[in-house]
Image (cartoon, rainbow, N blue to C red; front, side, top):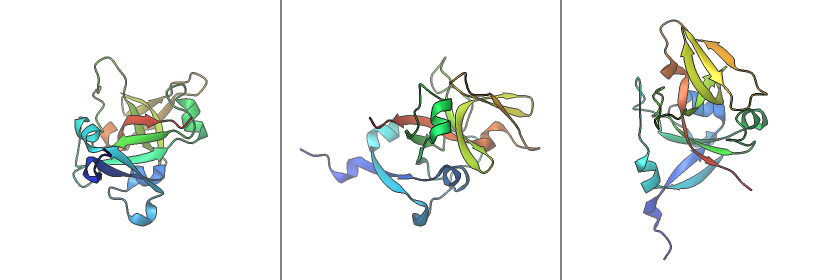
Length: 158
């Protein structure tokens, strides 16, 4: 028996810039819609810092060539990334594991591991061939203001 429609939730595929800067996605910014099981999405723990109440929780972005290769082998170019925008804390989702985040950088989205050093965000790639990036945080801002959300699912087309 096929699952009924109410078992699934539509999640919008958007550009990284939209995911990073638009709390609510307007229909003209939607590139595609993918369906995820509601039971899967409900199980994901949120860890929100600051006011994200008005933010649409889940969005999808596609990793471009540079992003995909900088996080290789965890990502590949063209991978579809489910971003939980209600998880913008640096707290590990699973003990002993680094969270992969979508991060606001130059009004766009980059995907990296994140840590802080003083007033800087350290954006660390998985692939050693790519540089570690340092982003100075604006006065009065914290890491959670730059974290778009946690990458909680990676879809790879084969």
